[in-house]
Image (cartoon, rainbow, N blue to C red; front, top):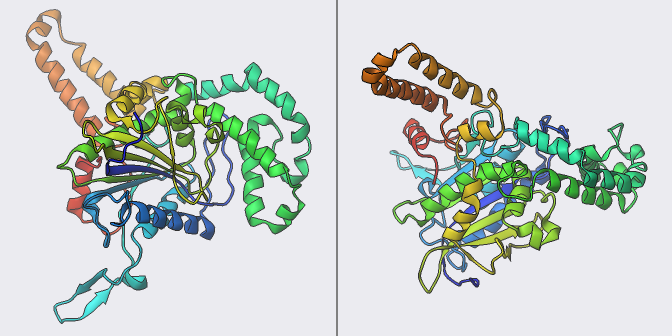
Amino acid sequence: MSQTDGEIMGVVVLVRHGDRMGFYQSPTTYTATATQITPLGNQQEFLLGGYLRSLYLNESSPSYIPGMSTGLFNQSQVYIRADLGGESGVIYDSCVSLTQGLWPVTIDNNITLANGSTIVAPLGGYQTVPIDAVDPNLDVSLEGYLDCNTFNTHTTDFYNSPEFQQMAEQSAAFLDLLPPYLDGRAIALQNMWNIFDYMNVNDIHNATFAQALPPTFLEQARALANWHEYNVFSDPSVTNIGNIAGQAIFPSILNAFEGIVNTTNPVKMMITAIAYKPFLSIFNMTGIAAANPQLAGIVDYASAVAFEVRQPTSGGEPVIRFNFKNGTDSEFTTYNFLSQTGDVPLSAFIDAVAPAAVNTTADWCSVCQNPQDRGCGALTLAAQQAHSAASPISPLGAGFLGAGVTLAVAALSLGTLAFLGLLTLGKVSKRRHVGRSDDDEVELQKSPSV
């Protein structure tokens, strides 16, 4: 299908955090140390938010989402969440700055009191925008790769592959030149992400380092890191475990599409703040990277993907448009994807990615072969309790009581798991909201998805 000029119905936006200080992550498990955002990172996200506002919340823009508030933030129209793991609070803090660009200060954010005085919110009318802070220990959708045993095996297999060994030999001469610039970090292709990140952070923030680093070294390190990370977070088949970062996040994206095309649902914008890993899997799973090799790598700070849901002028089913803005790029570029030209019918998008989606925590525990971590232990225990409760019943008793006992045990298990927030992906998170009432909190826990 060629690209349509249809009206936009809503948008799902994925954003990477802004500039931050350095940190270390394991080359095999990708567990990471803490770090913190910088003023530059906050500014990058604020500018990205302003760009998104000009595109989707501006009535003069051809991509304005009909009915969306162009002034004060309207909580009923937007759902926002941010990964609280990985790089510690960097992703959440970035998201706060992003929202301030989307909904900037305005003197219209005021209230008139009973005595007739008008009070403008602090800082010239600061708008408080609620963000769901997703704890990866309670919700695996944004960090599907963490504690995933089969993914760790995939990574190890990649490091042992002939392809990796060949690249290690080819890059050895360059890596041997790096010790003076790495402050004792391990010099090996396996550690390439940490090598590049150290060089990149210091090139931005350390003038002495930036002046001493030979002109081509950072770009050579970046190219090796791009190759390294893309191969870790992708797989030839969309259903293979190397794509787990994308497989885990896609259910929430599909759920958002469902909400957008539902005319009775007021939520028409979903924003998810994440690390760079899901971008790599998504680019691979949608065929974006295969058609655009320059995208087979780490996206820059403050990058964004926008899945626009549009209604074709000619009618028929809604279509998806894939836009990507790589960090400092001035605007979105629209890319063909899923081996099609232009906008892709929603049903075709669902058919392509739904079979690979990891829809529940139980699914994740199964595909990652993890019986203990990130909620899997509670699921295992519930299954054991259900089995124990059913075991003592005699065959005769089972004939009369089996159905009732099974239902009772199932109800007990489901109740326990629902309480623990382990039945679905992307439904329950550790919330760090400001300015939300208790009633709002209960409602979001019932149905936070769009």
